[in-house]
Length: 436
Image (cartoon, rainbow, N blue to C red; front, top):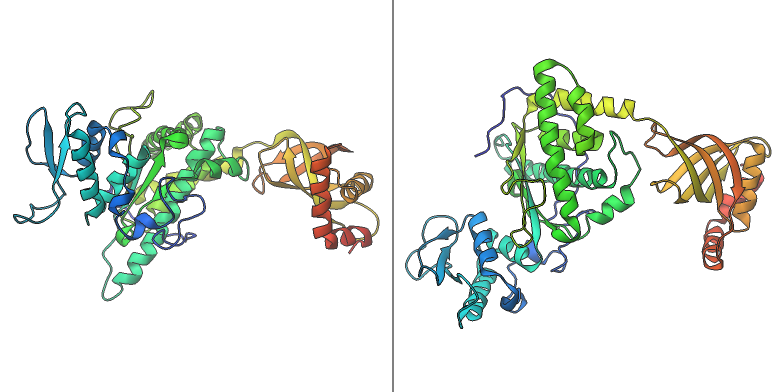
């Protein structure tokens, strides 16, 4: 169905797999807000736990059935339509058949919708579950696929498991790259913006990945649509930049693609998706109930990548990492660790960032006087403020050229919380005092 763009194959790099979401949903892709964790992955929803028929738009239900391959097999024009699951027709008297009203204007429309939703909940068709998910909470759909070589001999089970892990890992990275690009446009984010980017992925439901070949994610329109829209623009900009690089040898298109949301995080995620396959792709579908986002087509074209694209993606990612500049910042943070080699002299301090930079922690080296100030502030439960340059090397976790280290007054609640942290980490303070 989906063909790779060329037949060249590059060596396979290693990836960091995660557990299949049939077993554990990754922390950055949690259960859909309309359901409990794992319920959709194991069985159809019971009839008593379906969307309220009074709140279901028949046009949206029909659009979702059509999107997921259900077949319209007649009906009374202007009144209702009959739908059957994808695949060959069921024998008479068997299989699922849905009677969907065209509007809610008829007296029996709500009853027909209730019967259709109950039949979907009881249906064994995987697409029935996906239709109900999108009805429960309007969601944009993102689908990944990989053209995976057929396993040889008796290794089919192991190959399928490994492929599913790789697909889940790549999908998670791609979603995170989109969420990071919503927070800021940068060639390399490193540790920046990750807390809020991960929070933007809360509520995403990820379906099964049979054989490691296909995977679907349902992104709730609220609050996830900005991520889906950014991914649409970034993926197409990446495809254009790769084509330009392969045709001309230049990387200028990757530089301009940063504004569309392309960066090292996305190129690395696409590498993880494509490597080890004969080709891979991503498709987006907008939630029918929420309409089409501004600046996007009604039916976005899928974006496909092949093994022949990997060299361009790798070189672009390396350029993004190398070229992203250091950032001047003024950080307020709580001292969580102090370390130096002796009782006097310069030392290393680790801060938990409270304000001034979109990272969780930074590491900095301070001279003897600044180290003493940091240690005293730590002992009395006060954060410090420090100026410096947040270096891209190390993922924006290191502060250099530090200056103006001063304690910062905080309210009593924050002070008490910092003091509690101090008591729980007394070993660090002893380390700071003894110089060990």
